[in-house]
Length: 473
Ligand code: NAP
Image (cartoon, rainbow, N blue to C red):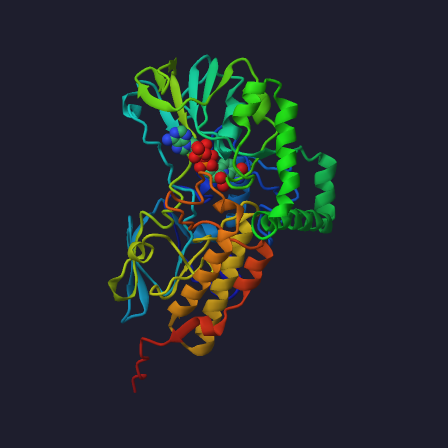
């Protein structure tokens, strides 16, 4: 829609799923909701005064995304149920040649907007395949499985688990939650918007914009706290400790849920329900290491086997795969996988040297511990539009980020990352086991927007590969 509005209406969207919506289409687990306030987790050009709650549930977000897509003619341009399997740069024609599950396609510009949390990650635990009951990942929730009266084992205690477990607790007979390491939480303070409040947002859009701004400023302070101003984490840590103290009376349980790593190192989880749920009589937190899965249960390293009828994998995503499994071949036949060995990197998270006319939205190092991914995507689109404008202005057909500029940006980024909370030692999906971080943006979100809005002419090389044919006489 932003591209059309900027004068580039010839856009084709390929979507592997049957519907647009990305993670919000796939993550339908009970309790799924956003942990970013809805007035920030929405498109700047489509404010929605009708959100039912401060933090909208999954179905409402999915509905919103589809409604916006419909209203702006995006659905007409979308080829859903079509997977792009490979993309190859054709230097002679200055075009991308795509192979899709529905045939080939040619494009002047390739924008990869594949997300970072789309491929579920199953744990490598011995015996998992031998389990006799249903096993499913939170992002592939099997709604046909009735949990009523069943013994459910949930592996993982990240953002997905802390939403799903409270939602299924009233249904299941018993829930065993397997925690490998605890994460910090903070009160979510979620609430329903009254009809009056929604009417007010509708009549006074400025009020909603003010709330959006206030939320953005708070989140940007959070970004500063995790990066350059770590002293700001003190009140966050205190709020996390207070939440545990208030909700849990048992000292042993308190100790087991209290993280020993720095707050923010893993994503801070916003919740009002997690600890009260762990106190319920039908919920048990298991912190013994999982040794093996049998056909009927889970065996801990201590040798105890606990019955399970259903296993829920809340074990996160293959977050460093970015565009995978799509194969991307750039100039000179070099693949993106080769370019990204050992770690994915991109200039401003958007462009990669050797891959002309290609941009990534929410690409490497554009995630944060706070903020809204929609904001990041909109900032990225503004950069793509600036690139298209530059191509048009200069009558060029090829734009590529200069390697020396991309390398200089990467050095600056890695130096800044070293001082952030994400690199203080914890396991998280941000950083791999070798310390490589293809995920995090080490500055404030306002900085991301400032740096991406314009196209620094010296950062890119623009030229014309295809010579225009002389008009026939
Ligand atoms: P996650 O944060 O990566 O959590 C995975 C959990 O599984 C962790 O507790 C991890 O333990 C555990 N785990 C992984 N492998 C294991 C194994 N082999 N044995 C035992 N435990 C294992 O995944 P997630 O909860 O799906 O969340 C991923 C991201 O999605 C979030 O950080 C967030 O960005 C996004 N998300 C957002 C929302 C929202 O409200 N907007 C909701 C859900 C998810 P360790 O911590 O010890 O590694």
